[in-house]
Image (cartoon, rainbow, N blue to C red):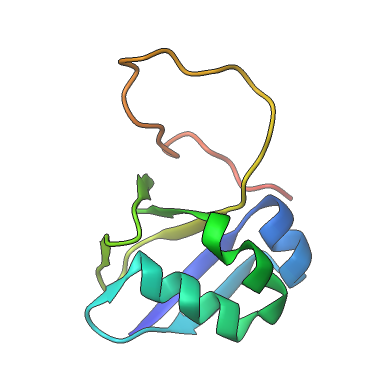
Length: 100
């Protein structure tokens, strides 16, 4: 299956583009996606193990299945910001805006 992947911050900078299309087997996991990104865009390979992946606006673990048509975002590690309070629940990307 072909998956459209949006790249943000350092991933976007290293790749030189804000979106990439990768071919994945069905079923595919986030781990499969990271491996494919590192092969398709070698400049992302050093970041692959630390990339956060969001599937349909929710952060996903490496074993998360990616369904055809899923919205995928790649967020590299960042520093700074305020620590989250316990019990706030998992972070989401519902209100995120693309970096331009």
